[in-house]
Each structure stands twice: as structure tokens, then as C-alpha cells.
Amino acid sequence: MGSETGILTRYAAVLDALAAAPGGLTLIEVVRATGLPRGTAHRLLGALRGVGYIAGRDGRKVYVLGPRLLRLLHLGQAPAAVAAAVRPLLDGLTARFKETAFLAKLTGREVRSVAMRMPDSESQSYVQPGRLMPVHATASAKAIWAYQEDGAVEAILAEPRARFTDKTRSGEAELRADLERVRHSGFAVCDGELDPGVLSYACPVHLDGAGVLYAIGMVGLSQRLGRFGAQEVVAALQEAAEAFAKGPLAAVESDRP
Amino acid sequence: MGSETGILTRYAAVLDALAAAPGGLTLIEVVRATGLPRGTAHRLLGALRGVGYIAGRDGRKVYVLGPRLLRLLHLGQAPAAVAAAVRPLLDGLTARFKETAFLAKLTGREVRSVAMRMPDSESQSYVQPGRLMPVHATASAKAIWAYQEDGAVEAILAEPRARFTDKTRSGEAELRADLERVRHSGFAVCDGELDPGVLSYACPVHLDGAGVLYAIGMVGLSQRLGRFGAQEVVAALQEAAEAFAKGPLAAVESDRP
DNA sequence: AATATAATTCCATATAGTGGAACTTCAGGG
DNA sequence: CCCTGAAGTTCCACTATATGGAATTATATT
Image 1 (cartoon, chains in turn purple, brown, orange, yellow):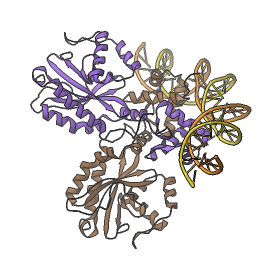
Image 2 (tube, chains in turn green, red, purple, blue):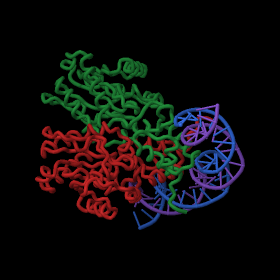
Image 3 (tube, rainbow over the protein chains, first blue to last red):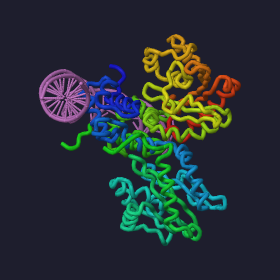
Image 4 (cartoon, protein in one colour):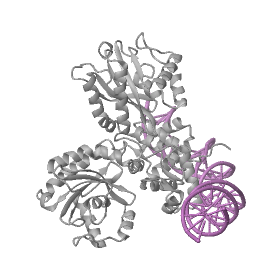
């Protein structure tokens, strides 16, 4: 006979308490902060840890906000905010290679370009923000999908894949092999599989505790971009990816369970 | 008889579904995405909205991630990431006024400085990062506390307040009046209430949907900083605060219920 | 080693979540 | 304007699930 919110209020109270304490809290501290009975608090913390909303630090005695919460927030983040955060990094890449640099983001089960920086000399844009990046024909989508949960990947593999050029690799086995290669090498390449004559590289952005949700890449005509060694381009992309992961959108303070 | 996580798994599934859909989801879409029965999904959504983890858009038919989740992110955010995000803004302020600019953050029930930029000419630092900002004697803490929930404010008011200088306003009534004044004017001032001869201004950062968690301020010797009109300094601070609120750490896509 | 404090486990109880079905609202087409 | 199907909302008997005090084990602290 009052406002009905159910059990969520209590979980929310626990999360609030943890969020308010930078260094994390022990069970007893949570009890004091929330007024919950010890047994109850213990169970709630266990459940929260079970779903990944909080994580245990040290000998698991200190609880902090967990990776899954961070993932939620990144996914829900307005594209404009993300775009603002990478801009400087893309500028740097473009200045160095005189080719287009971009950031791709996983949204639901699609990868789309969210920010892009073209060199002044370029007139044609290969990755307008918002462009859908197909899994089987773009480096950025491969860089991202190579690090997603198996279940989600299987769902993607089951979908039909269009052929864009005669180089497009639309077979399932090919795609599996490509993803595997990405996991080993740490980056992805596509050469003419989406647009003829267009080469692209991409590196995954490993967010501390939140997996991979973004990829940073470069695109350009094979003739021009191809003159740089893959090594060189990839090294620069990896550097940018690391910087982005540590940047303004970076992790809540977290750690491994 | 398997892994026990309780009801949280279902809430998490709903949140995941919402996070994966940039534009929000309707009840039926949530049902399809999660496989939950209609009635159940409806109730879960209601509870989530009740605690503010999701918000209704349009005629409340479309659900998106809500403000409270954003607040969690900000509170849990590593200070270093926040500091990186404001740096350019602080640089701008310092360059313009040749005085120290800083960002203060609410952590639990304390306000602390998290980032600071001194002019090259300055040798003494009034707001080293990490410094505690007492509610009754600093502009930044007042700027933040003026916009917190009544309950939390009352708790703060109940605490004892030290006298730092003979100008320190430690009375409860004085503090209440100060907070009220901040709410009306939109900024806070402190003149010698913490350190003698030191003047400071601060403006709250209104985060879209997440209330006020930060304040941006300037400090300096009254003699020097005082030569600028309050109007002028405050206008610049407000501009910076707005830019910060819209910046990289900005809101999840949200709106009013 | 002794002692206090925190973490964890247990379990009888009842509270709170469940989901199918009934009912209402809404949008669009005839 | 009314009909019709789909989406949204409410209801309620059923039972699975959360509850929290007390007992137990682990961990500091002196």
C-alpha cells in the first residue's frame, strides 16, 4: 500500500552506496550505508556480482562497480559524446597518414561508423558517420566481432551475407577464419571486399572490464594507403585505441574477480 | 538447481536489450528481445522506471536508459578520466583570467577538487587535486550542494563545521541562506572564508538528467581575481560548465518522463 | 593464543514475483 | 465513423523466492 518498486530499490541502494565510495566497500560498510540486514546485504551483493554489476576486489572482500554496468553505459552513450571524445585521436591519425580515420561502434547487433576524419585532400567519403559496417566485408566490424560473446557471434554468423564485390568473402567458414585471425594478430584488414579498390585496417578498442565495443580504423584507396606497411598503420591504430580506452569515456574503477 | 542469480538476471536482460537499441524499445520489442511474458515484462519495466534506471519517451511507450544509471557512471568514474575531460576547458579559463581554474566533484558526501590548472605566474596552489572542499567555506562545494536532494543536504547541515578564518560562516542558518542564494543566482562565491585573502567563484555543472555532480571554479588572491567583475568570471565559468556537461562524459540519451 | 569483528551459511516463514487471461487503448483501413 | 488487430495495461490465484535472525566459520587485532 505505498509506492511499489519491489526489490529493485534495494539493489539500487546498494549500487548507490558503492558508487558513492570511490575505493569500494566491504559488506559491513554496505550494511551501514544502506541499513539492510547483514544476511540480506550479503545475498544482494552476491547476486549483483553474479550478473556482473559489481566486482570483488582483493580477496573479494571489497566490492566495486563492475564491468557490465560500464558496458551498459557505453552502449547507451549518445553517439555525439563518443564522437567528441575520439576527435583528437582521429585528427592525429589523419594528419600522419593523410588518409581517412574513423571510429566504429557496436550497437545492438550492428556495427556502425560513429565518427570520421578525412584528410583535406580527400573528396570521397567511404565511411560517413552512421554507415552500417557489414561483419564480413569491413575491417572494423571484424575487429569488434572477433571479441564478442560466442552466442552473439553465432547469431551473426547465421545471417545471410551479401556479396558487394568479387572479392567479398561471404562464406561462413571464411568469416570464422577471419575472426580467428583477428584474435591472433590483434587487427583486421579488408582489401576491396566492400568497395572495390578500397583498403582498410582496424584495431579493436579493449575497454577495461567492458570488452570491445569500438574499433578504430583507417580507410583509403589501396594504391595510396597500401604504400604504408600494415605494421606501421596498425601500430598507430593500436596506440590510438589504447589512448581512447584510457580516455574520458574510460572505465569505472574495476578489476578482475 | 543451477547458478542462482535471482531476479536480477531478468532485469539485466531488459537493460541489455534497451542498451542495444539506440532509439529505445517499446514493451513488445522488449518482450521479443528477451523472451519474457508480456505481463512480466511490463512489470519489470515499471519497476525499472520506478527507480530511474530507465525512462519513458514520447507517450511513455518507448523506454530508454535512464538518468540514474548515468549518475552511477559519473560517480564511479575514475578521477583521472574526468580530469582528462576537463583539461582543455580549464586551460581556456586560466589563459583568459591568469588565475587558477579547477573542477570539483561530489564523492559520497564530500566535495573534492579533482583537476586544477594554475597560471604559469602562480606559485601557490589553493586547490591541489584531492583537496577536501568544506561545504560552508568553498564556492565549489556550495555550488554542488545547492542542487542535491534535500535529505542529503540535511545530513550535511547536521555535521559540525570548523572555523577557518574570522570570515568563515559556520552557522547553519547562514549556510542555508548561502545555498538558497546559489539556487537563485546560479553561482557561488567565497571570499576569504577558507584561506584569508583568497577569493573564489564556482558554477554547478548541470548534467542532463543526472543532476549536479561537479562544479567548475576559479580561485585567486582577492586583490587580483577581484579586479574582474563577478559577472565576467561567472559567465565564463557557466560557459565552461555547459561545455563540460555536453562533452565526452555527457548523458545517455534521455528525457523527462 | 585469546578475543573481537567481519564474512558466510542456514532455514522456517511469508512476502513478492509470476504469467496466463481478461480487459482497455490505440492506429489505421474499409 | 466504425470495425479490427495489435499493443498496452490490469488482475489474481499460485508458488517460487526473497527474507533476516541466529548459528557458524573466517579474519584481524592485541
